[in-house]
Length: 146
Image 1 (tube, rainbow, N blue to C red):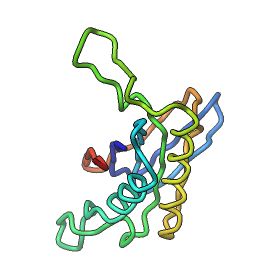
Image 2: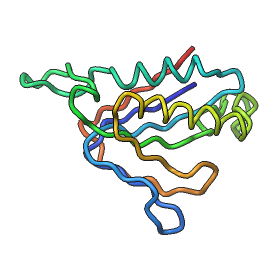
Image 3: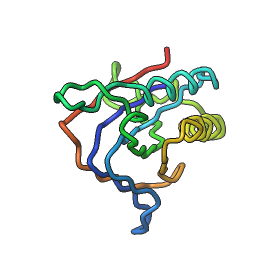
């Protein structure tokens, strides 16, 4: 699994003009699932992201996690993160999980985050989404399960 994690002041996902997910202070996570990923990968990534110390403490040092700050998370499925651009001009998505497996692990990841008592909003799987955010910092990290 691959995640692009952005610390945000707010983030929103809309589908056909309707808001389907919205958070304030927290993390916006774009999540890609590969065909080799398992629930173990989802558990690892959920734990890693929830505990990343990327929020500022009282000394303005990145020293607090999402759990410690009481922040929220918006998770959007993003198979294009698995796009391989090394050859040619069109990305190859051969390593991306198929829709059924990707949705299963995406939902599993979201539930793993919720079990940590984090408020989670989501996009809509397999929909064309408009994602907006106000990046805080900016702080943007790539986190992989492998």
